[in-house]
Amino acid sequence: MAAEAVIETQNKTPINRREFLNFAWLVSLGFLSLSVGGVTFLFTMPRFREGEFGGVFNLGEVGSLPPPGSEPKIVPEGKLWLSNTERGVMAIYTVCTHLGCLYNWESQQDMFLCPCHGSAFEPDGTFIEGPAPRSLDRFVVQIESRDGQILAETDPETGEPVPVPDDPTAMVKVDTGRRVLGPPRT
Ligand code: FES
Image (cartoon, helix red, strand yellow):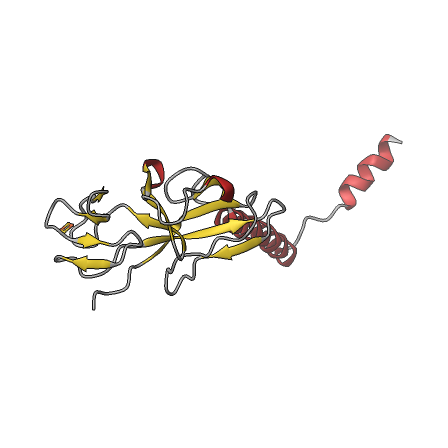
């Protein structure tokens, strides 16, 4: 028995150069596939968590929106003003389109006013006057049914207000990673 084992060991031939290169190539291919898979996985992961600026904010149900035409409401963590206009709902970026100051809502004058150089904007972010080159920027709003269907969404080309669907339980979400530039002043 011991003699047979010795013979078998002796009969084993060392791998030749071609076999070694094939083996090395397969190992490299395996590593490459793993790396590509890992990078693809990382790209599919959302970069920001929900409720973190740059990610999606859930602002609650349609039924809890302020009435149309009421004063805009600030959402500081989302850096946005939630404005439910007569034409629909908007999420307006809190940063002035002139030089980046934070503007305020002036209820007496029913407009947004920037304290830095006096730019003024309508409740829907439309430019009124001042040195700002364009209307206020806005984020994409999505109104989603309870089963996850998108019922309405901001047009990413125009950023116009989103008409509110007749479903008080639908959720209002704002994607602060998708900013639509306000149209240039005319
Ligand atoms: S930064 Fe707002 S008007 Fe200049």
